[in-house]
Image (cartoon, rainbow, N blue to C red; front, side, top):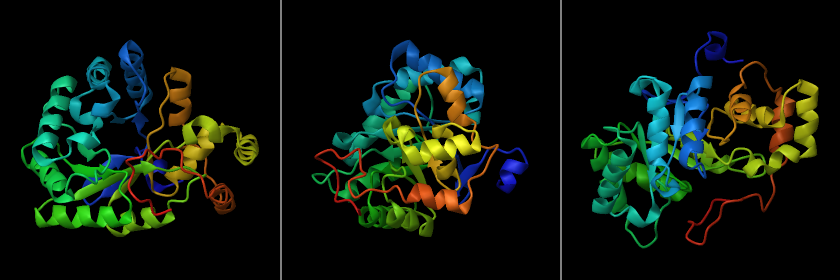
Length: 285
């Protein structure tokens, strides 16, 4: 286990002085009271990183869930995202303000461009993102679904504006090889955050994962999420039931061996990507 785990601290992935809790709670597809209750349950269990997006249509409920938890605002690291249609400079700022209105908050900890958009110059998008941070809408900014070339451009454009890209949120799980992108993120001091870390749940039925879970006395989801953690990656699994939320959070009491890590990595497939909309960028793999 890591030194932080041994000390009882919440594991976090750092980008400079920005520390993002490694165990995050995703809210995609959660709606209405189910969303409010799931967010509160996650925070009650111990999560301190919550992820939402304008496109999810649940920012109101996520904000309610955070308030209902009774936690101080700064005890929760909150991420939201601007949808791909709204990433022109002024549209991005409008979207960010609308997100804060729905969340009923003064700012978010991390504001991301949800997807790049070929029809909108990246310069305009990054300029808007940097303004959002300077204007106090977000404490930090980043991107999502950016392959290496676009990530490097975004980092360069932000640095010219005196700002920094701190995170890149992308699909990642044992079926999908993201080695090139993860290495690029680490080389640039950018936190890689994994969405769909459990392969939309399908990975938990994989025989290799099942065998490993039985041997370790853990569940399949815990094994996969521990695999992410040991790579220095933040992960944001989503669940709607308190038992599963707690299960996904409980990944600090054991460790995968090097052989286990390699065995899970060997599950990668040539067609392992599960999220690939028509407007997606040119992927690295």
